Every structure is written in C-alpha cells, then in structure tokens.
Length: 215
Ligand SMILES: C[S@@+](CC[C@H](N)C(=O)[O-])C[C@H]1O[C@@H](n2cnc3c(N)ncnc32)[C@H](O)[C@@H]1O
Image 1 (cartoon, rainbow, N blue to C red):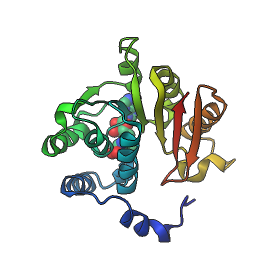
Image 2: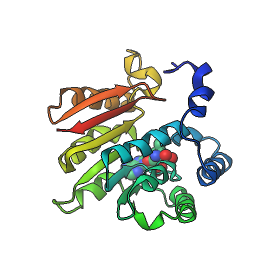
Image 3: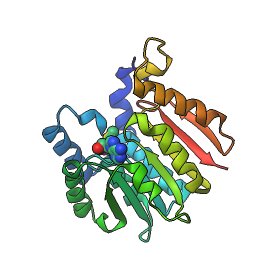
C-alpha cells in the first residue's frame, strides 16, 4: 500500500529543504554500495523534517537508534547548536564506517558519539541521570516496544520522540499481516496512544512518522 500517492513523491522532495553536496553524495554512495538496502535510508524530506524538529525543540542532546550510513544522524547533528551531541546506536561497523566519513566531511563528527552494540544494551548502560531532548527510533522494528519503554523515562519534559516506519507500508491495517515486525509496530503504536506520559500524533509522512512529546 502506498501511504502517499506516488505521483506526489517528486513534488514532496522538491518542496523540502534541498540536500547539499554532502547529503547528496552520501545518498549516492549508499545507493551504489547497497542497492538492495537503499530503502533503509530516510529520504531528503524526512531529513528536512528531522532538522526542523531539532531546531524547533531546541534540542542539545539527541539519541538515534538505527544509524545505517548516517543520513538521519547528519541531518540532526547539523541542526544542533555547536555544543550539542548526538548518541548514535547501531550494530554495523561496515555501514557506520560510511557514515563516519560523511560526518567528517560535513564537520559534525565531533558532535556524534557512535556506539556499536545492540541499542538496548547501550541505552541500559547509560547513567540513570542521562536524559535526552530528542530521540529518533529507526532500527529493527521488533525492538520498537522495548526502545519506547527504555527511552520515555529518559526524555526531559517537553522532549520529543520520533519513530519511523510506523505504518509498515500499510501492513498495520492488514489483518493478514501477522509477521513479528508488524505485530511489534502495532503494539508500540497502541502503547503510545494510551501512554499518558506523552501527547502524540502519527503523521502519514513516507512510511509513517510518529511524534510523541513527553509531558
Ligand atoms: C532503517 S536503518 C537506519 C537508517 C538511518 N536512520 C538512515 O537515515 O540512514 C536500521 C539500522 O538499524 C540497525 N540495527 C538493527 N538492529 C539493531 C540493534 N539491535 N541495535 C542497534 N541498531 C540496530 C541496522 O544495523 C541498521 O543500520
């Protein structure tokens, strides 16, 4: 199921903040090196949305769960103030080595702390007092309910959680779709709606993006 009419795709891309050379090169290298995995990367308009959200929330401390070749981290890190930091969680040395090169080139590598380990381990190993202004969740879909529970208590009041792929190409409303990832996404979507610690909205941006603000 297409979430947004594909006829609008190019128009949507053309009407978000344009990608600069570094973002374009990163997207191009990802396409060339991992042609079957390109859909893992967020799109230019989603990157523009993330950068806007960082600016609008005044975030200084961000956590990203799921970094891949670094596109979303780059968009967010650039939008941070110069003393801001982004904790990037991934398990792939190979994919994140591409990310590191492009972060260096963009001049934001010193703002990004990349941890190569299962994200839940990384989050659980943080000191209790460690909190975040913004969290972007875009890793393994079966992990989303656990990431939600681990991160909500670590968000400051007014902090924003952003979750990608929460519509699973429409599978969330397909009763035949019983795979583990779709079940996990349905579960986290229902949890968020009922969670009184946050106010939230699920936006039909690309594959579905939830914004949840800690009360
Ligand atoms: C959809 S991609 C992330 C795309 C990225 N946000 C971007 O803009 O290009 C998902 C990433 O989650 C990572 N991942 C999968 N399981 C993970 C886990 N348990 N902990 C941390 N990262 C994980 C994968 O290695 C992959 O790089």
